Image (cartoon, rainbow, N blue to C red; front, side):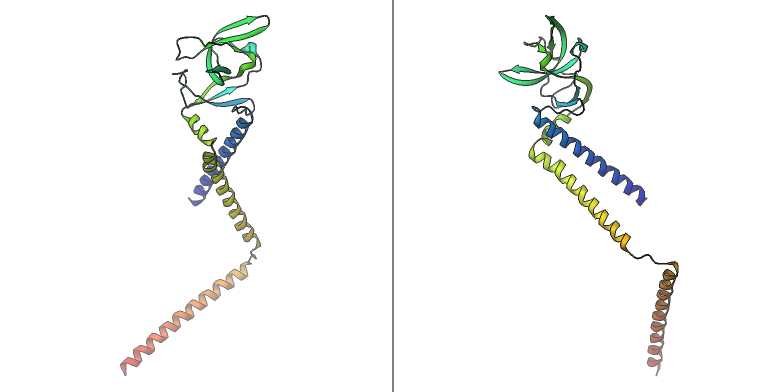
Length: 220
């Protein structure tokens, strides 16, 4: 039972470590690339509005993939792209509802599933970040946003990783001490057991003898 529990604990510790490292890579990668992380062509993004409900909603985490060929995109695909809203350059994730081809230039008319009108500006090839893979984690985007803060990164990443390495260091030291212990032969082990038994019998005999003396003394 203890062996099974030990294996389960080790597996959980490694899972936590892997997740911590993955989040670390995402956080640092997004920090260097305009808040857009890229892991081998896959892009995790936090949904920032409800314009695509019920497909996904604010604070969900969605996974997009880099677009290798712009001409592979078609109507009904959901894409993430850079656009201008209220004078600011922001990320937007909407569905393609139309495609414009003009003089070897392709742009996409987009609209949120929860919106009644198309977006004001088309998405051009250079604006596209990626295509949604239809993978989403409900509410996990809020967690990712917290992990990107200094407080969240310290609590959820630095502390677990420090505990993991301290535990592994302790295991290493214990294993090293076990290796350095002199191995006893079977004869030595038998001799130790024999001496222990003899000492135990001698102590019992002494206690028994002391008890008899006390009884004979009280009788006189």
